Figure (tube, rainbow, N blue to C red):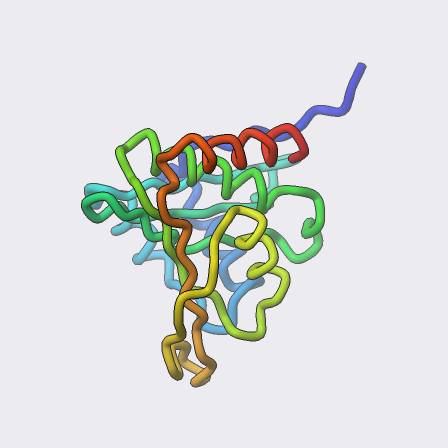
Length: 165
């Protein structure tokens, strides 16, 4: 019998406590649970989670505005990084964005978060600018975009990542 691979599923209000715990483990300026509860009620939002062995190991969310999808947050439990959970969450978010009619994808990433920036580059995001002192600790955010994500070349990129994820 093979190893079971945890599946990506939509986030529900019942997940918020575990997501908030993972948020605290992952970020210096975590979102409080109330933000996740509110996000789950807003139109144009899509949040997903991955659980393994009864523990939250990853989550992510996006906001759609017209034809742009803004990846709002993504996190993987520190002890479970480098196990492709980030790629699986990104695939789910990209698929959700494209299924909902997005043409372009965007996000901000901490200038110091080279691992995340590398993941996003793998997904075809390129640096287009920076937001000075964007984070509470005054660190800059790097602005990244994947344009024309609704076109066949980008979908092929996602299929190749999916095959390797």
